[in-house]
Length: 106
Image (cartoon, helix red, strand yellow):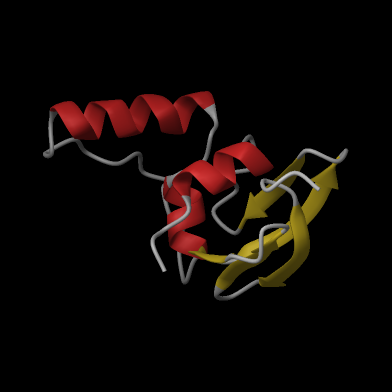
């Protein structure tokens, strides 16, 4: 089994995603962290702008109104997870490799 393959996914729509990996490690991603780290082109550009200029103004719809949640999530083949957030963002597909790369330290 490849280490970057999830053995188990647990999504709590109001809290986040927990992944148990094939190598026995576990990663937790809060909803806000998943949204911020979306692999979509617009979020990559925003992260680059924010790295270059910490005073970058976030887009008006970023985060939406009310608490940010996961509305739905679907597997994409055997390689990724697609997520729709309560602020309408749904253009990022999180590959297992990318999730492993951005996993917060436990």
